[in-house]
Image (cartoon, rainbow, N blue to C red; front, side, top):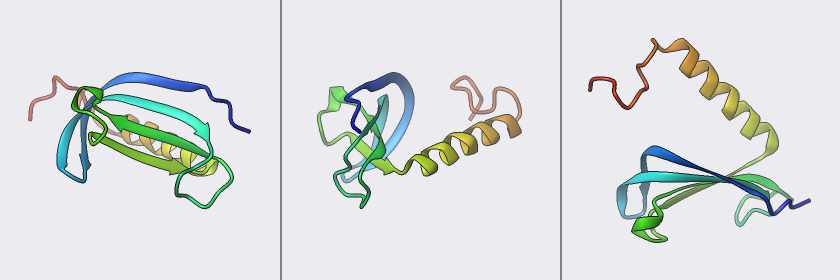
Length: 92
């Protein structure tokens, strides 16, 4: 069932779309019918920079199991990295 509820969060990062790399400033997460994936419903995540228009967007459609596995993988990667390494203030 579609919830039509979207969770958005301001983020800092970069994404690569058809026109190349762009700054990513917002993520939207929602459960809905996918546009491309062959499933009834998916967890959809849009990484975007609204200030740069619709072409500054990377979208993924994940099964519930894949979305939960991704969350767990992100948590493991961050917990295994030295504190502050993934911070915006970490030296390059």
